[in-house]
Length: 227
Figure 1 (cartoon, helix red, strand yellow):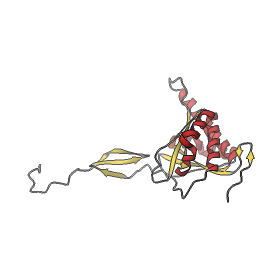
Figure 2 (cartoon, rainbow, N blue to C red):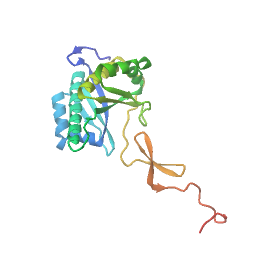
Figure 3 (cartoon, rainbow, N blue to C red):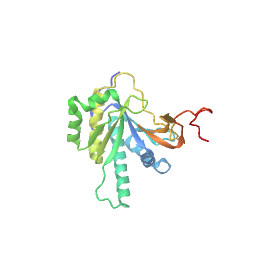
Figure 4 (tube, rainbow, N blue to C red):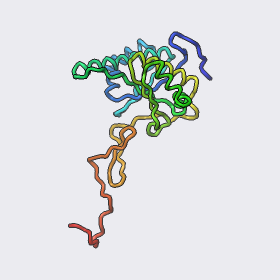
């Protein structure tokens, strides 16, 4: 059944699930000491916030609830990240404050609607919110989802997330979505051209600890055999 669209203070008051991709350090910041930060976020926003398990460099943070609770949760996360940036700057000589960055995980079938015809929708979002929005060209590994990166001030990010939610509600995903699941830190090793690689995110990184001979060992009667 399609959710009915009811205007509320936070925009469209329907239940929605938004998935975020975060690095371990960001997840640690959201969880807080003994889980206090995430507990506070859940209580104050009213949204369900779940963090994927596993020893992974990346984790999925799932936020579910009526849209106004999702916006509150997003606001709390964005302001927490800004606080972390300010704290890290107090120990560094940098003078300009880097933007807050969040990465959403969105079904690829909805990305066309987010970009709009000739990029019109994404351009409108950038101009009206002041946030930078980028939709990844490639799907995340072993999934039918893409990363949508939003960066800017917490206020700009919240406005941008509201607009993205509206688009996602108006254009539901088509077909089955294979969700992205981050791989554990002990990634499998892949051999190619005599070099061993480990997969990190979307990239194959040469693995220094594993070496494989390019050619098969020479037969015993080979003139090229070296003792």
